[in-house]
Amino acid sequence: MRRDNLTWVSEFVLMGLSSNRQIQAGLFVLFGAAYLLTLLGNGLIILLTGLDAQLHQPMYFFLCNLAVVDICCTSSGVPQMLMHFLQEKKTISFTRCATQLFFSLAVGGTEFLLLAAMAYDRYVAVCDPLRYMAVMGRRCCAALAVVSWLVGLANAAVETVITMRLPTCGQNVLNHVSCETLALVRLACMDVTFNQLVIMASSVVVLLLPCCLVSLSYAHIVATILRIRSTGGRRKAFGTCASHLTVVSMSYGMALITYMQPSSTASAEKDKVVVLFYTVMTPMLNPLIYSLRNKEMKAAMSRVLMRSSETKL
View (tube, rainbow, N blue to C red):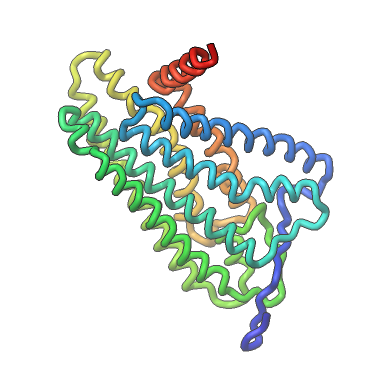
């Protein structure tokens, strides 16, 4: 495509992680196993939340949304990555690249906003337990989830449009494992100041502001926990937040390091690590963190299995 001496390519070549065939075979097995674990773990959370009535609570409603986000996140890039490990020519069409970019941005932004909503849920549960069910009613939970998804989708649409409109003047080799904003911006052959400003504004909306809300919620939570006199009471109160706090630390920590850093210190190799962390590691670890540290989730699994056994008998 050509317009005013600027060109847009019809496909991109992804350099990936390695050109060594043996290393690629090993990575295929590793990432393939991680992808299966992600689908199984998050699918189990969705299934348990739907089947067990005792999990029909605000916390598990948001956890179910987070599981959907994790499945979408890992499915937006990992299947293509696995396919490219087995191919000599690692290409992706312009349309598929734009689609992948949109979905990865949408689920990424939605996840940060959902984590902020979950922090608010934990704040109400610890700081105002007597009014918890009144405050976190179905309408409130639904509204928080809908806003998270809509803002994530809107942000992704804006970023995708302004990123894919950048001409590359014939250059189509992306030093990355997937179509990612920073990698595509580096390939542009025109001034990208506007794109950098939009990326920064986007980071503020879907990353920095939610991070501040999470920090504010946990500041109140910690203050409330410290006022609890009994050690057992403090441990129980903190236990209700431990899993969420672990996931928040992983997700926000890596994102802040990546998207809020000066452009002069950014590197393609660091971007690859971050994208792999978000598309492979985080979606796989989230269900493990919540299920292994959550007694209610374990109990729900036992109840569902018991009902299943009784039905067979």
